[in-house]
Length: 174
Ligand code: MG
Image (cartoon, rainbow, N blue to C red):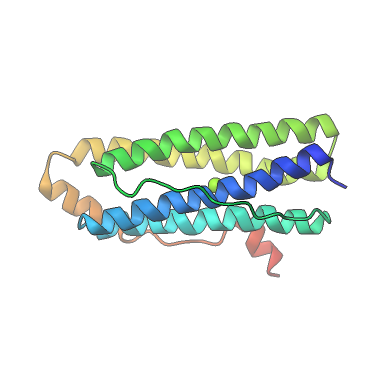
């Protein structure tokens, strides 16, 4: 059984992951409106990944017989000045998510809840990748943003990003 504290904290994390999904969907729509189809695709894949993160937590709660309570999802911005601003906010947001995941891991440690620690370890690793990828995107956009051809080529490259089902969901489907 999950402790009450961990149960509510993971339930809140489901909401945080869905809010992340909402944020990246808004960025995808705004990028598309600005004519960047590839950037829109990159953020759409991000949107799908965040929904998968919420699903992984919900599956885990179900498997631990912990009721999921879906809470209201707060609104998100509708537009950003530049593509660079989107990636800068992505990095800032992912740092906050990392802090939330670390907090969940700390509670699971206090509880000596080894199953939860194992599940959360996947998210700890995932957050390292999320921050790294946002930092790389910032560096890439900064390198080309003043050059129309550079942005055109980058947009083409980002159009190729595809969504891969995260391993905890791929395993669950077996
Ligand atoms: Mg996430």
